[in-house]
Amino acid sequence: MATYQLTVVGQRKEVKVDPSTPLLWVLREELKMTGTKYGCGISVCGACTVHLGGVATRSCVVPISLVGNRPIVTIEGIGSDPVGRVVQEAWVEKDVVQCGYCQSGQIMSACALLKASNGKLKLFLQAFSYHHHVSNDRA
Image 1 (cartoon, rainbow, N blue to C red):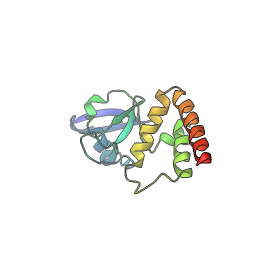
Image 2 (spheres, rainbow, N blue to C red; image 1 turned 90 degrees about the horizontal axis):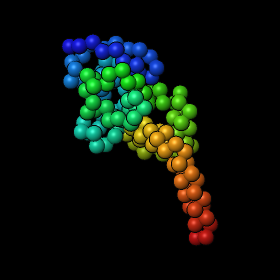
Image 3 (cartoon, rainbow, N blue to C red; image 1 turned 60 degrees about the vertical axis):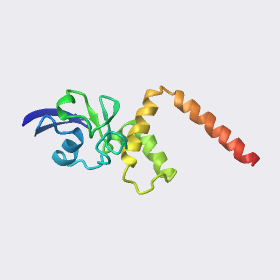
Image 4 (cartoon, one colour; image 1 turned 135 degrees about the horizontal axis):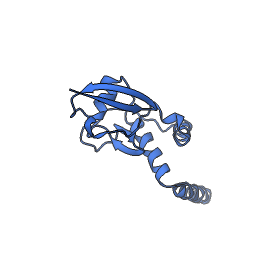
């Protein structure tokens, strides 16, 4: 067992866990933050996505010993971020939810993509939306 100091959704947390424990299980079991889900356990499905140091990261394969001092943002905290808030509002407005199990990972991935695009994705989506609207009007 080792002791780790983490910053999770802006709050300092201390956990005592085995260094090989995946971040996902630290969040869910030690910190009781269950919004981040377990899906495949091999970094493929994305249900476990969190932001680690601002980067979308599959928490099921990141051992706690590699987190270091990078801040962790989970689905529980993404709404306090302006991009996160907009994505969550759009998610509800467009009724994206299906079963809902993996949507937290999808929201986290979408937020990371929007932030990384520096506004370029917004221009693409606006152009796509316009094209889609025009195409539907002609149908």
